[in-house]
Image 1: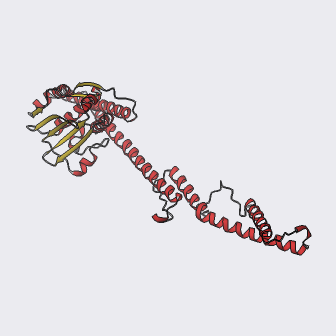
Image 2 (image 1 turned 180 degrees about the vertical axis):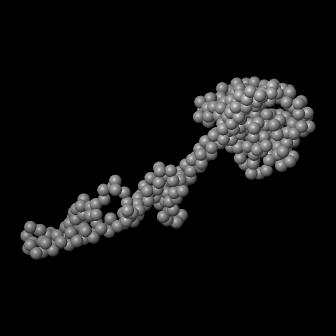
Image 3 (image 1 turned 120 degrees about the vertical axis):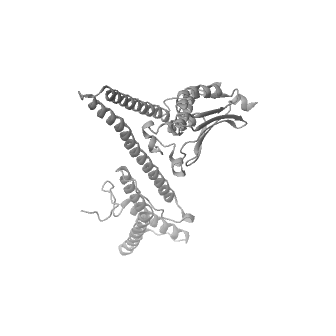
Length: 361
């Protein structure tokens, strides 16, 4: 059965005719009448008035007080009670998981009241909550997909290994597939834990001064076998020395993830260029490749968790590497940006602040 008033709330006890308000107005009218008569030099002795006259005076006060009480109630209901009821109903809907709620302002901009500002802030809060809910849903969906894929590979190949007539070559292929799937699953869980700790700031950066150029060289050499296997031309243009004040272990995550992505998307015979320069505004590191590149839509989401623009390489990653890169740089007061052209490659640019002592000099 529908309520007559969709904003009605059974939890609120509303009086149709509030007696305290009536008595307040009654006292005010009685006082004003008495003061008015005193100001014009006439003092009324209510005890000496005839009963009919006294009843008429009291009846006038009562009628005026009742009218004022009803008028005040209507004004309060229209300007305050109804908006608050709408707000309460909207809050209950949001608590129930409905993030499509919108409360329109009751006045124009030039006549805006505190209630209008409250409604605007509420709408903004609901919009943000809806975005968070969407991100949470996408997150669980992506995690389920990323976990389900390697598990399916493991299950399928494990079942094949139980086949008695399986050849040694096929058995080795199944074993390799299981190992690759377990590595991917392990990498996914590790990156998820790292990203979760970074976002919750469980891992706090421990800044220290060290040579960034030496770190870049060491990270690049970890992938030497891979670029030689793909016949990729690797060009490093670094300064002799560049001191930064940052968490060395966290920044290593940045360089290994960026280098891994560049190698993954650069075809055989391609080229990767690593450059580093120091300037008055900080240290800049750029990593360019001649891979497949990205369009504008992909670049807009490239740092989102689990997003993979090029699905042909989906089995080689889990879409968390660049999200880790951005979060580490945020904690290190750095930035990362990307420029790309489809079919021509991409360039990632990382900017780090100079150590405080160098900025002062």
